Length: 109
Image 1 (cartoon, rainbow, N blue to C red):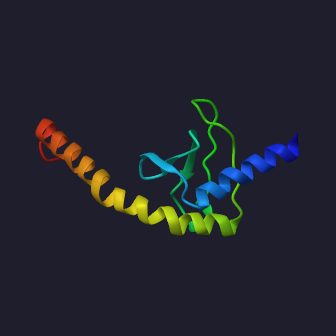
Image 2: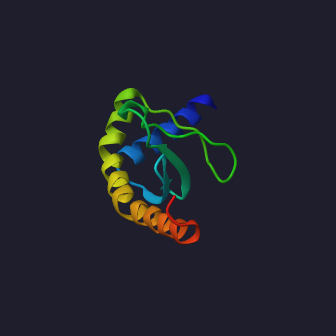
């Protein structure tokens, strides 16, 4: 059974590294990835070797995955540019809108 679980984990890691994913929600720290309809989170913060699946229990998560340091660096080279573009556009615009709403409500502090 453990061998089969490892094979399945390797399958999902390979799909992520081959960019055979759909990207879901994203914030400054985590990117949601879907592989064959299964949800995983990729940690975006810190050093490239930390670009690893973010383990969470429940809420529709399928299984935990492990990246080697080399796989994490590859994942960083693939997904960090996507995250950076998102953070510089969509997330930045959202945060500026929130700031303007707070200024309107409370004035300049």
